[in-house]
Image 1 (tube, one colour):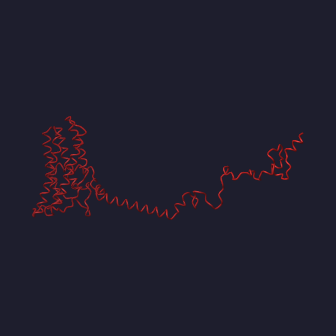
Image 2 (image 1 turned 180 degrees about the vertical axis):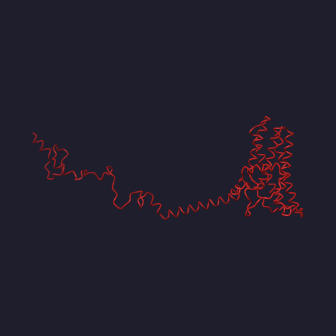
Image 3 (image 1 turned 90 degrees about the vertical axis):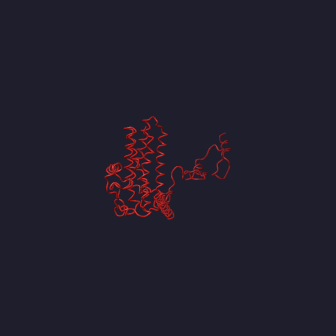
Length: 317
């Protein structure tokens, strides 16, 4: 019976490499014939590369590696890339120079450093000069190779440190004075600061317009005018503090002294800038143009006490 079943299961074929799927017994020799030498299945169409990385042929760099064996070396060694980087650097430097030139034209940053080159000794002497200018003799600005020396070396040089600090201190003292009268509010303090700044700008613009109309050839700059106009905040602070300590009488007496001091300070300072060399040396002023310059100098100096009173009288109760 077993021999009959075996005879039925094995077909009569001359090709021993093909075995029917219904065979019950498979010859071991036939199984070894269907297996390749490397152990892979002959029915597999592609090689399995997940087991081990594929080796690169000798002499060829892998992906992402440059010609010298470093990543990104190919990009850096490209002449077009180097040319583009050089062109971009040139454009950036040209743009920076253009911005610096236009910025220095409207807001001279390099010149502002000169006006803030002060020290403690200069500030103390300049404050004393603003309050007691009567004994000072030499009002000329010192020069070194056609360039004015820094303010810390010359008490007659204009600066922006005292005007800036004076403006801020004036706002703080105004807030203190309003607080003692129970009238302090953030809105009133903001209006006080805004009005003082607007009056300062209007004063500088009026002086510039007057200089243009009178055709005065002077080395005064806009920053110089801002500095000279900002010196009056020192007298305003002294007047308001005296009013807080001694009442309205102390305010009027102190403010009167400070007004006379700033008037003399402006006359002696601006006459060297606006008048001719002969007038600066004490010679009598002759000619219509020199008289206009003298009137302009006195007008600028006379406007300082008016602004000082206008910005402080309402702060003293």
